[in-house]
Image (cartoon, rainbow, N blue to C red; front, side, top):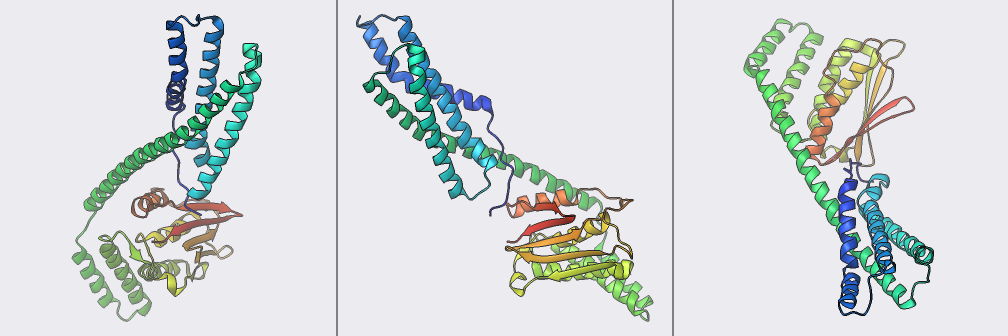
Length: 345
């Protein structure tokens, strides 16, 4: 299954304009024919001829509108499937609309015009509708492609702007890394005899080094991310002890795949921040593989007092995935389980 994305609908006004224009174009040959007969003195422009022209024009416009709505909006918004499956569904729906409208056209013609439609004329009408269906199919593809490309450009610009803002914020808050590393080394020498404290500082030092190094990388391997997550989990376990458990089940075949840096850590931190962690309700976070992706899951037990935060963690991660991998995160809450799917590159 391909990742779900937001499909921007094409506005009804735009579809109506195209439908009216196509109805005029498809009616043009008959208009020229009637004009030639009138200018040659063969016929008079009676009420019946005007009614016949309007009847055909309205049906052409209605048919064009229905086909364009189905081909540009309905199928893409309501049917989540692969492109080839969507294409088959579109063709089937177009064929059904064609049959339905031709049946309605033939049935209504007698009631509106007061006479049955001529067999030769009826054959010409059916030919026009078949041709119009093919034309509408390709016009709909062009409209959909133009709208998607425009939306993609706008989203890329928004993401670039967000990245620039994040970089500016990082520069404003940046401190000298050498100063911090020297301070951590000094702290390690002071607590050398305290092994748990020394290990805590070493883990913290490794995390900071990883953050600095990954800042230059758009993607890191799962192996690197899990090693970083191990250090982060050690800090959390030091604080919560047996009230926090991290369960990782990832095959070696996944270790060389890539994802945005600190994606796993952010989701674990999110679980710690928003869920109760107590002796009666310890927090267990599962990190496992499924269907070619990594899933981070935990039981939902909301805190009574939420920790302070920007509430932008998941939003920023979704934007990073959209920019770097052109994919969406899948976030679900089923049966009190909070689950986030991380696609891999």
